[in-house]
Length: 319
Ligand code: ADP
Ligand code: MG
Image (tube, rainbow, N blue to C red; front, side):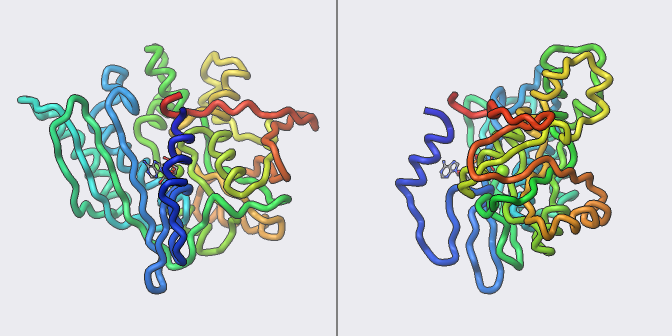
């Protein structure tokens, strides 16, 4: 049983059918409150599962990243992150320098994204973990994974594959580490400004943040929207950093299609709104690329007009 089967089992046991409440299945749970929408999300960062200090990420960056990746789920629905709760589990240690660094990194991200820490929990445990709950809000109904329609165009912000390539360089102790790739892994950004603008202008029919890999997260949109998708390989943005490394074209495509931890936004747009995306890209100074389109079923890669079924191999816990 993998992570996604477990989530399915939980959501079948705890069905929530209330007006104005959207529960398990999206980047955040959403609750309508007055004329606002409140967004809730929680994520854990566990030592030696989500990060490994021996591989070159430091405790400051762990603190920073743990908050940013949770904020990204609010961005994925077009919300505005507001408050954070932090539950920590760790070994008791005489030297707590690591913890000071973690908090400083966490503080930097909290200041950058203007979220206030309003509570949490601390417990002794056999390994370090930080569970981070964020509360966000929006004044309009947020953008769900569900909503993509056949014929919609698929867009991607920024580049994918950078964080996983950065992790690969760290894991393999490569001498020519490329800072931009390593930074993409250890100091990711959440696309809050872009997500909010997409919601404000009602540009997307569905949206998700890419935490598990482009194809894996596209599959979540496809599943929730009951559609399929075609990704045009020749349109995928390839960051110039990849040209500095001796990766094969196949390796690079694997990073781009299946690498996780980039926290870019993947969204679908109905054809009549496509022209507005260029203006949005200029306004937010974020590269936005048209990478494919929505079809009735299946996930396909298109190369030189030929379609082949995509092999999705994104990260899944317990698999
Ligand atoms: P993301 O990668 O965007 O953080 P996940 O894949 O972690 O999303 O989770 C998918 C959905 O399953 C979310 O709606 C999340 O709230 C829900 N979920 C995950 N684990 C649990 C759990 N233990 N109990 C209830 N819901 C869960
Ligand atoms: Mg997400």
